[in-house]
Length: 99
Image (cartoon, rainbow, N blue to C red):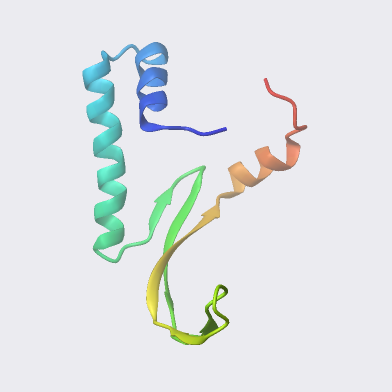
């Protein structure tokens, strides 16, 4: 299942009752807040859902899969997601059938 910003706008419009413009502004601000926090170097915790954590990776040797040529993969910062306990528990109880 793919969730898009537009599908989130529709859900907020239908379930919460905000008009579509307000719902879109809410979604845009929500994601902008997460992005700004990560850009500033903060880990982001969404209670009951999980954590977006910044991780620094060191440079390391690699290989170009197309040519087989050895290359050095430069150091970089990546975002990882670790699900929270409530989400983990829901996923463990999930039976694979849609609601």
